[in-house]
Each structure stands twice: as structure tokens, then as C-alpha cells.
Length: 220
Ligand code: DC
Image (cartoon, rainbow, N blue to C red):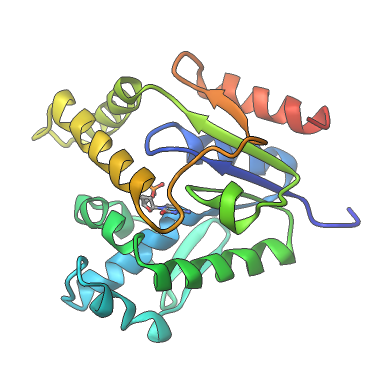
């Protein structure tokens, strides 16, 4: 391969983005970069330091002393593996506040751009097609109805043994996160005109992966 290629994928929570992005990256032998995991890792750092996630000055105060990196699809916070910790509900409940900070976003975006300059990547998140890699070779907006996204998240949690939840509660949670992510001032989630819309409401993971791989291999 003579140059690096980039596939940018944006979309709301629970649309199946990361699962699909990971498989696509694997099939194409590209690196997968889960940018949501980076915001989650920083949220973990804020909570570990007992800072208030809603106070942007407090949140930003740790930026210079935080290291976030990926190695073999695992995420490290200050050189410690945090794959599992960042999926905790305390993180999910607070990450939207952290991701609203302009300073945090600037730092994450520059880290992400640096990663994409070094190798071919599949990168997923909320601002990849708009801010991080607006000139990506391929851009996708992967979404699904809020009810279907809620249903998937509900089944995932039940599968993990979480039993204190209701489907309605999860759907409400997703609606709330959608609202924060798409109305925030800094890089709100939006679909660019040149992103290919992939609605996964009635698609399996395999069907979604095939659709994306075919579009990429077919040269759009
Ligand atoms: O995809 P996820 O649920 O792991 O994302 C966690 C949060 O981070 C979510 O609230 C949206 C935010 N996020 C973002 O603002 N920009 C990104 N590129 C990725 C995630």
C-alpha cells in the first residue's frame, strides 16, 4: 500500500457503529480507532480525581497530565489498560459532559488526526466526518431508529446480567444522549452531505459490514 487510507464513520449511540467498524477494519487490515473510548477514558480520569464532570475548568485541568493511547485495539489511560472500566454506567452517565468541552475535543481531535496520519484507519465517533477527517476517503453515517438502538442496548445489558433496567428507561437514556450529542455547541453530531447513510434498523451486523465493504471496494 503506497498511502494511508481512512474510513470515517459517525452516528448516534447504539447504532452498531463500533461493532461494524471493528470488523471492517479487520477485513481490510486497517487500524480501528474507537474515538468514543477516548472520551470515556478521559471521563474515567476526571471521576478518579473526584472532579465535577459538569465543571469545564475542572475537567480541562487534567488535559496536560493525561495520556490516552491504543495498542492492538486496547485502550490505555496513563499506560494502564482500561477497556472494561470505561464501559461502566458511571462513565456512560457522565461522558456527554466531558465531550462538550472545547479544550478536551481539541486535544482528542489532534491525537486522532495524528493516528490517522500514521496508518490506514477505520475511525468511528460523532465528529469524524465533520471535524477529524473531513477529507476521509470514505464517509459513512450509521444510524438506526431510537427504539431499535434502545432494544439492542437493553439486550446487551441483560446479557451482561444487569437486571435493574427497563427497555423504556434505556430508550429514554439514549434519547437524552442523542439530544446532548446533537445539540451541543462544540462539533454536534450531524450527517455531512457527502456521507453515505446506512440505516441499520433492519440490517444484521453482517449485512451492514458487507454493505460498507462493498462500497469501499467498489470505490464508492
Ligand atoms: O460511542 P460512545 O457511546 O462510546 O461515545 C461516548 C460519548 O462520547 C458519547 O456521549 C459521544 C461522545 N463522543 C464524541 O463526542 N465525539 C466522538 N468522536 C466520539 C464520542
